[in-house]
Image (tube, rainbow, N blue to C red; front, side, top):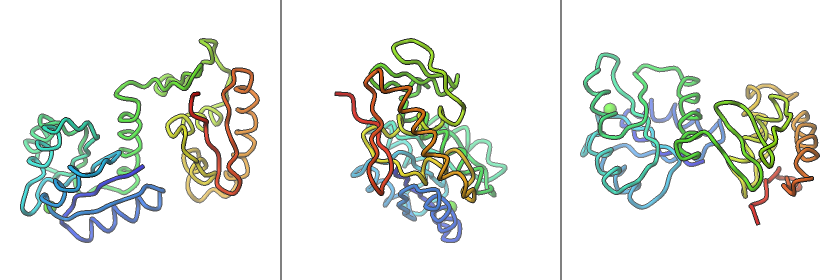
Length: 222
Ligand code: CA
């Protein structure tokens, strides 16, 4: 998961960067609108966190240019508390959500998770992988259209693996999606959830591979 932060306030930029890095996102940070526009034209991100008041090129113009290029990357706009007109304009130009300053970092992380999930499922909440389908909003999974009996934890593990199918997901990343960061117990329980999931999926030929020392991977559809 790659996130671009565009924020000219160094303290805020630094706080956001650290907090999202701790949540295991790969974070790039730029400090003016022109840099943001260059980076966004050249590289792909899963999310952009964008301040509106920026040197050189303001946030509105950055959004305008991103959308003009046809990029669908989710954009989370940061605005001042009383700037209703800015929020409306940002959303009209193609931003997906906004946060008013000052904000709490856990709130940012929650918005980021929601936006990335929405972006990856192409606006719908249905994830599919071969015979497997998972409805992230209804919290249900089916295999060959037959409902799968999964606990909430198993469903959580499956959702993360499906969102990143074909890529290795570490136990720590899985634990983090299911528990708070400080919960040490989580890591060991992950093995149990994966083991149970594997048994429920193997008959349909859906394989969760163990990548020794690294984590797990839902194999790409063949
Ligand atoms: Ca600013």
